[in-house]
Image (cartoon, rainbow, N blue to C red; front, side):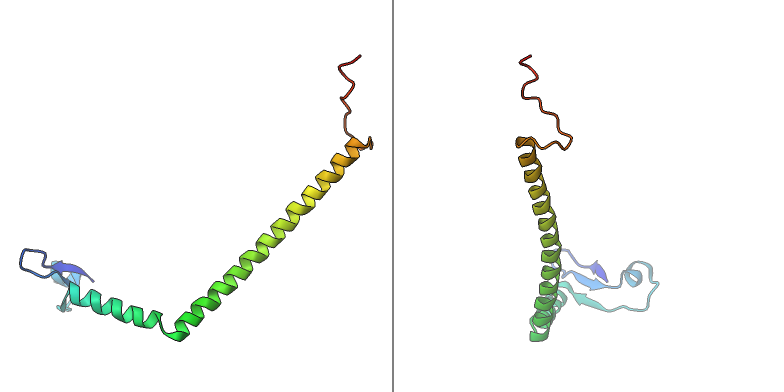
Length: 111
């Protein structure tokens, strides 16, 4: 369905079958005014979207997606906290002289 007619000064734009209008390849010769069709379509769509069951479905789906995303983020946060904890342990070991493969360069320029 496409706008196939109208658009002049005194003509209303109309939706119809483009195959019928431009090629005659379809037997559907129905034409509907753009203003009427869009107003009706939007009103019907709004009525369907605002039904309690549609609103409930939307809220339920949003809640499930939110829980899934928060679960993933919690896992990532835990990984970051563990990495930070390990860095602090390594830093503390370095400051206390724990020999675990680090190079002490504090006196290297004084000799």
